[in-house]
Amino acid sequence: MGESLDIFDIIQNKTNLQDIDIHNYSPLTLAYIGDGIYELIIRTLVVGKANTSAKNLHKMSSSLVKAATQAEMIKALSEDLTEEEMKVYKRGRNAKSATMAKNATMSDYRSATGFEALMGHLYITKQSDRMIELIQMGLSKIGKDVR
Image (cartoon, rainbow, N blue to C red; front, side):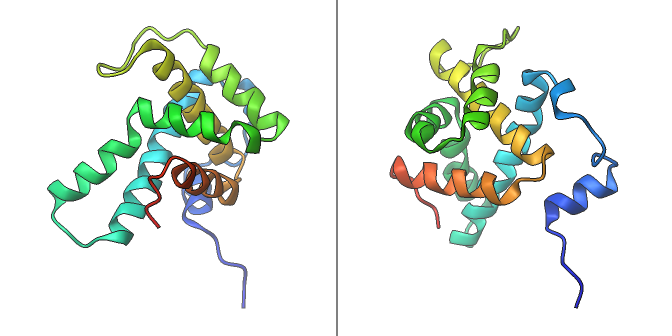
């Protein structure tokens, strides 16, 4: 039986994302894709936990994707990150963005941007297992485990 591809591999293969140099991407570009992939993972975890109305699903997931939660997660995960992961996080955190979240402090917003940049980096470099491991570990460490 052949090796199966996970959804991340399928998306990357079908969109010709497999031949890129991660070092050419700005941290805000990594944060952009990281925001989307993180939200997809959170929505998947929430749907797996409860078959309920879309309103309830949105309420559960929105509290986990907001900047304050992401900032709390990355702080809880800091000792678990590799040196490379910490570098990516710091590049994202220190990137100058023209916008800011409506309901976040500047500190939380920057930390969340770093977290999202790390998620984007892990996604683009095909480290989906590590990305999901960090997300689940982070949620658990801040008391918001949805498994």
